Amino acid sequence: MPRAVVTGGAGFIGSHLVDRLLAEGWQVVVVDNLITGRAENLQHLQGRPDFEFLRHDVCEPFDIEGAVDYVFHLASTASPVDFVKHPLETLRVGSYGTENALKLAVRKGAKFLFSSTSEVYGDPLVHPQSEDYWGNVNPIGVRGVYDEAKRYAESLVMAYHRYKGVDTRIVRIFNTYGERMRLDDGRVVPNFVCQALRGEPITVYGDGSQTRSFGYVADLIEGIWRLAHADYHLPVNIGNPEERTILEFAQIIKRLTGSDSPIVFQEFFTPDDPKQRCPDITRARELLGWAPRVSLEEGLRRTIEYFRTQV
Ligand code: UDP
Image (cartoon, rainbow, N blue to C red):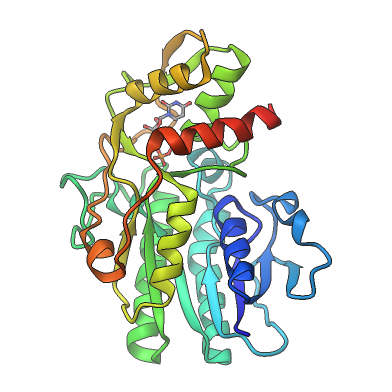
């Protein structure tokens, strides 16, 4: 039975990955300091002999007793609201945190998968974004703490692969939504859905003409699972190319929730908010035989049901 360490396993995506690994018969050790993750995401696993939770900040060196076959390094803030609130922690987890996780993989002879982000493309000048695009990032901007931490981390992962022979993978995750997102994480999906369900104004930043492409979490987990087993070391985009403007997205949420909330326009939360984002998923299709299966409407219906139980 393989044994995995999942850093950030108490987070939204991490906890879904943990569920998948356990369902596949793996043993799982989660390492998370709960700065943005939540213990309740893992509550249903408490007491299982194949599951362990270690509350620890991966920026501090750590070791795991026993064999480890795979390190999934997901620990990071991920929402603009969170990385603006925790800028230094965000930089540290990308740098020190990633190196500590890589060192664990070296000591254990484990494979390593790093969760990167579409933010490495910054405010992209190429559309849609393929993995070959180097990006357009403002290193000193407010979002730079996240973008550059992830870019540095990718560089570090490739260096450990090239010079230390670690068997690494990099997934570039595009906007993902689904059950277990925090209501207050500030991202557009929880914000709009909660606002719509509460009958509050739906806050569109800017004029709403910026685009995003939203992928449902189950599709992402399938992509990560397949990538984890592929013999491939360069980054792979995983996301759903169903692109919408944020204004269209607000209207979709209104319709699916049956809400009569007004749509209001506000200042951008951060400067350098990317104007467009859409994954080119050719590589994932060809390499992994992967494509998203859950449509935006279907995924949002499931997510709205979850948020109804939370608001
Ligand atoms: N956004 C918005 N209203 C909100 C939250 C976000 O209009 O209440 C916009 C935000 O400006 C961005 C997009 O929605 O253009 C996606 O934002 P999010 O924070 O979810 O993630 P990002 O893709 O920017 O990392």
